[in-house]
Image (cartoon, rainbow, N blue to C red; front, top):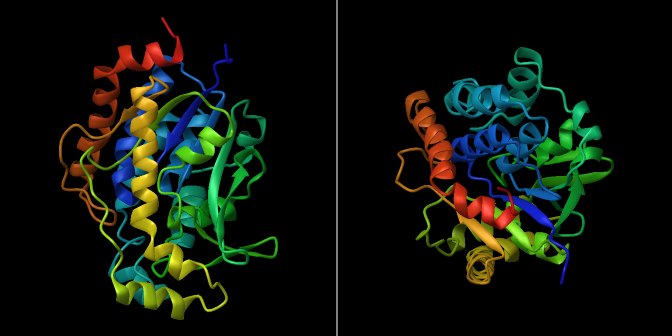
Length: 285
């Protein structure tokens, strides 16, 4: 019989990640840890705070900090020419104003990984979170076109969600056979093909990377493969797939503090409602 190897798999979702932050708070309350963990996009930020067992940060960043008008909207557009100022979010809001420190992750026992899209090779690679810099964590959330390229250790990096929206393939390839997957979209979500204009804009924006426009063109197909794999794992009782049980007005880049708070609480309550499934998957009594 194969040894049980547990894994936590986190999608991104921008502001919708308040749901993930709530779900991770429930895991901390239950004292649940994993052998492996994988985070994509904002899922990487929530993963970092989960590994540090910081319930306060999970709430503060996903509900209060992220609604700061200095991060998304007109102010950052005027200040830095982009509608999302990731530098301001990480350096000013998280570190300077709220005291975020990545150093404790170096002592983390879980084998945790974050997906980063490397423009130099045109693919998403997974980096051990224990060895990551704050800039690499920022890169994991930097959406193409909306965000800027993060340059670190001679590499040009962006959000790994360009190819791996839900990092389940990497978890399976690493031999994990008990996967708890948390996503921010409804169970019946259907990703639409990228518009031709967006694909062309990718090609023009990143001329140094021949793969990125094609990766974006087939992004919906990759997503379908990831969902198909998840459903297969669920059928084999090798996964529990948790997603919002009801709709929310929160979008990737928009939502009020009240709406985010409600989504955070939904994450907690959905996990509680499915605790018997989760405990059975992880062999926890």
